[in-house]
Image (cartoon, rainbow, N blue to C red; front, top):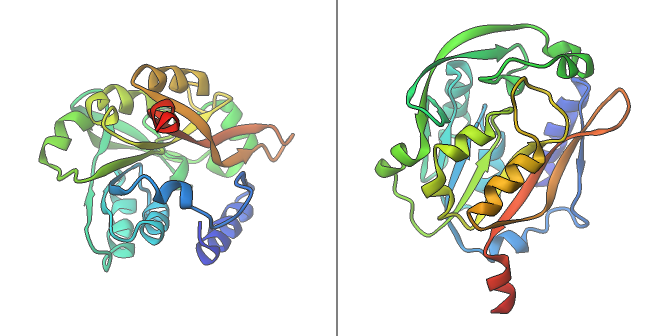
Length: 243
């Protein structure tokens, strides 16, 4: 993440009691990502555009599609990305079914989920205890992608607070076409019924991806243990190495 954006995000999260740590040895070096010649980015779980603004700074020419089901966050996303070229946003969630569901909209909106929050999450981050239910539309990525222009190589980011496996199940055809995936993965249960890192790893391995490390991780403010990480998965690594 570029320095100005990184400072804003880290300051905001620290005020809320979260600790974000960068794993990369050299900040601002994204040559590894640029070499994949990404033409289209899918930003699944966009919130108010944190990732969208960052990836636009790294890949300014890529077509960017963002998905955000919470109306308040969606409206802010549109406002924040109003001047961004080749940007399109959709006010619905992605999952493994085409339906309407009740979403647990949190007072701290990045913690909102289609799954109920586990007690471990509330103990570590008490300010996330307040929430209300909001009905949202859920669609499958493989269905909505039929109306998207997925040009060039594809990068998919998934940050959906425990619903990652459902997104993958509903978009396996599109996922299998991607070159790079950035997926929020959990090592402890922060939402009831969510998959753990190993579950996501096994799902993605079956469609040809290899885990290649993490960009950032979230640690517990109580004991410092790692709770989540933004995990990077790359397609056909062995073939690229051989080439």
